[in-house]
Each structure stands twice: as structure tokens, then as C-alpha cells.
Amino acid sequence: MTAAGRQRLPLAAGIVVALLAAVAIILTHRPQRLAVQRGVAVRAAMRDPTVAEARAGSHWNEVTVTAIDDHLVYVGFLANGQLVAEAAVDRTGHVLSGVNDRAMRVPYGDWIAYQPAVLVVLGALFALMAGVAPLRRWRNLDVLAAISLVVPVVLFKQRYLSASVEAAAPGMAYLLFRCAGKGFGPAREPAASTPLTAVVMSGVDVARRVRWLRALFVVLALVYVMVGISSPDAVDVIYAVMEGATKLIHGVLPYGHMPPGIVHGDTYPILSYALYTPLALLTPVNSVWESVDLGLAAAVVAALVAAWAVFRTIAGPRRSSGETRPVEVEEAGLRAALAWLAFPSVLITVSTGTTDAVLAAMLAVAVLLWRRPALCAGMLAAAGWFKFAPFALLPLPLAPLRGRRLVRALAAIVVVSAPLVALLFALGGLHGPQAMLHAISFQFTRGSEQSVWSALGIDGLQPLVQGCVLGLIAAAVVKLRVDPALAGDRARMAALTAAILIGLQLSADYWAFLYLAWIVPMLGGSLLADRSGAVATAAAPASLSPAAPAPSMAG
Image (cartoon, rainbow, N blue to C red; front, side, top):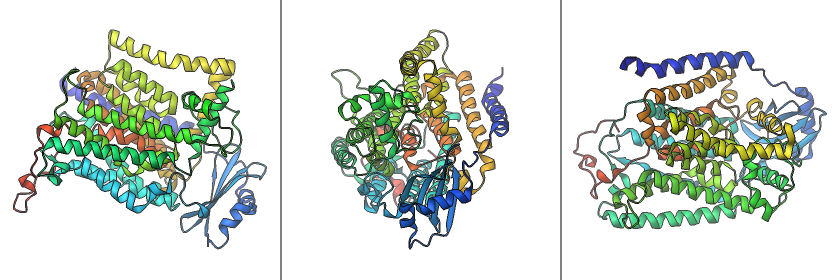
């Protein structure tokens, strides 16, 4: 095959897979039917005391009714787009759970993390750590796109759920195309730039800047500890996995055996529960009224592990046991780690205790291990057994491998998966794996107002976009197959990973800002990554002066 043909092959493969997948999804997709008639569900919800209290004086003017599954219907009451109350109604017309959204200070997590001042300070710190000078650089547009994802957080806090999803779409779509372009495009050096930290602290030498950044990291870590562990309102996900872990301790699979209180709390792969069994041994959880403080602590630890992984991805290991890193390289690593911790929604995510913080740490470690494909494949397999979506990333580290390296990577996947499959069989018998897959299938059939497609009323386009995401994965696999050297470029691989994760989130039936934690470490290792010690200077660049010519939009 000619060089031109090899270049076009990934695009051709992606297009073919996208079209075939879209057609298959359209032909096999069946819209979820309401378990009970719309009018019956609305009347049942209106009779619920909690919902009635919320509606009183709210001036609600809209009702949304969505099928949760074959047995439950979601009813939401809105006032000019703002959620007032919601309820889950079963097929007998009984309300399982009514929620007064007007009485909630925040949807979940610590109210401190939602404060405008906190969001502004963290956003400014993120821009300082990730931005560069001259200001006219693509990287600064990437920073702005990332910061724009604070808007969905603010809207979600005010319970404008559809508007929150709509506000997230432009920034995420931009980052998807930027990451795909970096991953598939040719490797090239970015245009010369200087980190904003060097510009702001132009009179400070590099060694002192590093000491200040270390101190700032300690301060942010303490903020995470204080806000995260003291959070008064954990999300239902952490209750679900802790309850499932408690079930495992008693020799029972969580699938189909979860206590009432959380709808579909058993919809996660088995590792989501097994990983929390040590915590459940110390503090068993059998209902939403019990303590999940250890789960909150686990989210804090996960955020700090992700920060370490991002740091190591940029700064690399120490040269030898007695040799320290160049201070310029360590500074670049610290900036990346601080950008992760400073991303505004991450602190909120951690304060909810959700398992998304743990998944972010797993993905950050996988990127760190990218040049060791067997370990990377094993980590992605573990992440898939934890939250399923990372299974879509597994073909990437496998694609460029051949011979013994491929065998070792496949063996790593087996080593990770075999004990979990054995656990399913041991506790659930022959039907254990089937029970897990049936429970997980809820994520692919659920109805929700929290998707771009429902929010914009363009559900018909969703299968097309889902097909495009599968095409993106296929194109990445073919690209890595015909160009194995690409796998050695960790920044471009992180970009491909981020593009696929963003695509999965945008095309899904349900989205919440908590999922942004998955992609921030990937951005830190790709679009926002640098080893800028070689180009950074202690003084501000001349191009920032008013008389300097306008720089090009590159890098």
C-alpha cells in the first residue's frame, strides 16, 4: 500500500464503521415505552406530599414524563425550565420517591464547592496553570473551552437540567474535534510560548517558582481534604456502591438484591462494588441513612492520585535514584497537576463522593502507563470493570502490538478480568455474569431529560452520532495499526482517549457534569501538556508588549 493510501485508510475505516453502526443502531433501537400512562403518572406524582409541597407557590408551568425503564416513569415539574419537583412512579401508580428540588441547597456535594467565589478562584487558577503567552494561541482557546464547562455546573446547581446539558455541548464538541485533530494529525512542535505562571512571576527564578507551586499544591490538597470529607450531601452513587459492597461481604451479588431507596443502584460492573469492600468492612452501609464518610475519603484520595499521575505523565520519573528532575520539567508537571485540581467541577465531583473521581484516577494512571502497553491494557480493563465505558478504549493500546507484546497485553487483561468473572460465578452461579449484564443494560436503554438529544428535541440524530463515535474508535485502531509509532507519543494518545470519552458522553442517553472528571486528566496530558522548561523564560516575552506584532494562531 502506498503512503497516501495508508494515510487515508483510517478515515475510510471510520466512515464505513460509522455508517454501518448508525444503520444497525437505528434498526435495532426501540424507544422505551411508558410503564404507566402519562396522565396516571402525573396525577400520582401530584398526590405525593413531598411533590405537593414543592409545587405550592412555585408557579410551575411544565411537566415532563419520561420512561426510566419497563417498570418506572419519571415525572418532573418545572417553572420556566427550572426543576421544582420530581418523582418516580411505578406501573401501579405508586410514587417510589418524591423530591422537593426547591428545598435542596445544592443537588449533591458540599455547598462550599458551588460558591461563585470558589468557582471564580479555581477557574482563574486553572487558566493560570494551563494558559500560555502570547495569548493568541490555540492552547488558550482550549483553556477557554474547558473553563466554559463551568456554566453547566452553575445551571445544574440552579436545577436548569436541560439548559445545563445544552450549555456543555459547544465546549465539549470543540474539545472533541481539537483532541481528534491532535491525535490523528501529524506530530509537530507547538509554536513557541511561555507559561502564564512565568509571565505573572517574571521576576522570580524557576527554582523559587517550583517551591511556590509545591506549596500551592499542598494548600489545594488540604482544601480537597476539608471540603471532600466534610461534605454533607453525598450523591446516591456512593451509597449504591457501598451498599453493593456490603452485599458482597455477606456473599450476595448486588444485582437484583439492592435495598430500596436508590433506583437502579445495581447498574455498575462488579468492580465498582468489590473495590469498596474494604471500606464496607469498616462501615457497612445498608441504607441511605448510614455514613459514607469513608467513600468521601476515597474520592479525595482518588483526586490526589490522579494529580500525581498527571504530574508524572508530564514530568516523567527521576533520572536515577540520586538525581533530581530539572526544575523546568518539574514546574511543567506541577502546573499540570494543579490545573487538574483547580478545574472547578472536580472539587464538586469529589465532594459528592461519586465513583467518577476514582475512574478519573484510573484513566490518568492508564495514560501514564501508555508506553508500557501490558500495564496500560490491564489498567483500562480494570477501569472497564469499574465503569464500563473505558472498555471502548481497550482496542487502542492493543492495536499497534504484535507478537509477544500483544500476548502480554492480552494476558494482563485476563489477569484483571479472571478474578472478577470468578467472583460473579462464585456468588451468582451460572447466572452471575448474566445478572450483571442485565443490570448494566439499564445504562443503554434508560430514558432521561439529561441528554443533548432530549434537551434539543433532536433524538433522531442520536444514533447517527453514536455511530460516529464507533467510527472514531475504528479509525483510531486502524491509525495505530498502520502507524505503530503513534503509540509512543503519549500526548497524542491522551488526545485520542479524550476524544473518544467526550464522544461517548455526548452521544449517551444521560449526562451530568460529574463525568467531566473523566476527561480533565486526558486534556492535561494532551492539549494542555507541555515540557515547557526548554522554552520558558523568567521574563515576560516581548510579544506581550503593546508594540509587538500579533502572533500567529498556532500551538
